[in-house]
Length: 342
Image (tube, rainbow, N blue to C red; front, side, top):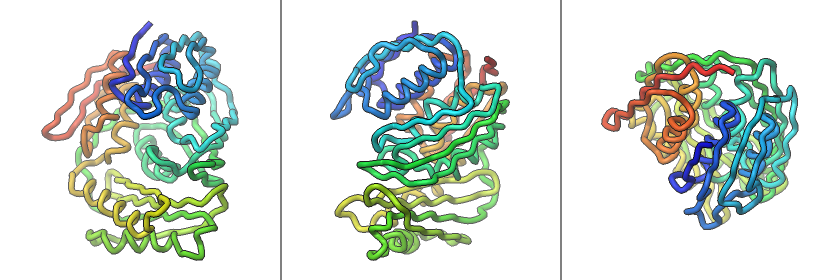
């Protein structure tokens, strides 16, 4: 049984370890889970990821309860359904749950559809709009046919968002991406609950961004007000190039002006642009598992070596026979994938 110290990374280490355990059928024990967090151990959204992954690979699980610092995950065989409805039960992130499940679903021999109820726009996680327009973009580049649609937005603390996903059997290809190509345009997506319409929060998110984004580029801006269980808002900004896309998002907070959220998103996207990276700091860690599973050598230029990037690389090396070269000066990662097959 592989043993992984969860103290080297937060919830990310759990998600990646469970994903690769479920896929490779290698048992794993993860200890010190989220030990450095104010509320250490499994939270409801982590627990749901473990439980669903276990269902998809007939795993025996020990320590599957909220607050648990240790989880033993012992998979036996794959039994991926064609359809599964998952209710996280809180505002736990839909997209973080998908990080646990997607590597396994990609290797199914049939189309898989998921309906997930939970948080779509929550702190510490990619929004579903980001996944739809940024992560999905890169997945398609490497041969993964994945679609995600948000039918209802769910904000903290009640959640209640409703998301549909579709994954087709895929053959993963390596990715060589160190040059962006020409700048094409910018898309802005502003979403706010209907309770915030009188205060024009969605429009003000866009205004705050535009006043602070200094780059001249063709821009499409969209805003809408949505039904939700409690007030909330988010802004997503996606900068498209010939060969890649950079993304940044921001969430509204009680007592924080919408214009300030827009300003912070603009600043974050400008930082990504100035880094010369082809993959922003969020998608960089999310794509690594798939590149490690591909057959062939990948080379990517990232925005920065975040803790999530470093954590994922460490876990990948535990499970897969891969060769990884990290160039901190040029901010590139070279991965010779294992060409994984079920």
